[in-house]
Image (tube, rainbow, N blue to C red; front, side, top):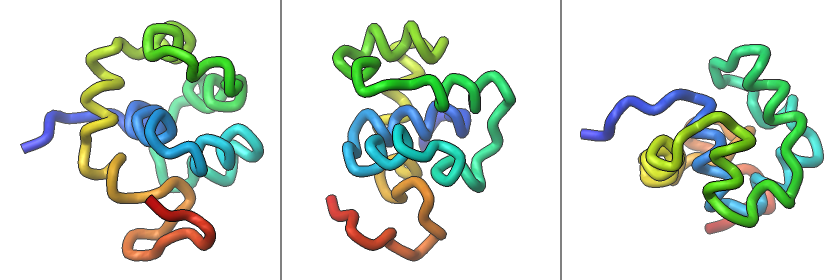
Length: 98
């Protein structure tokens, strides 16, 4: 069974792996976090992310306030691996593939 991972960490874990969702989030973050339970500080963090924040996991951890262990758990979590951001369960957002 997967360990409990916050919605914020799931988003970070997914966009670490999926560059299509990362690009979409960097372009229009508010449309990509729909359906996730996030605090105002987490929304602000997502809004302030840039492509440069993804050069290393240590830097990503620093700017998000997550630990590298939390990010690793999120990257490997089934929900982060199996569903693109902005998609509805069971649907694949157009233009995205693994």
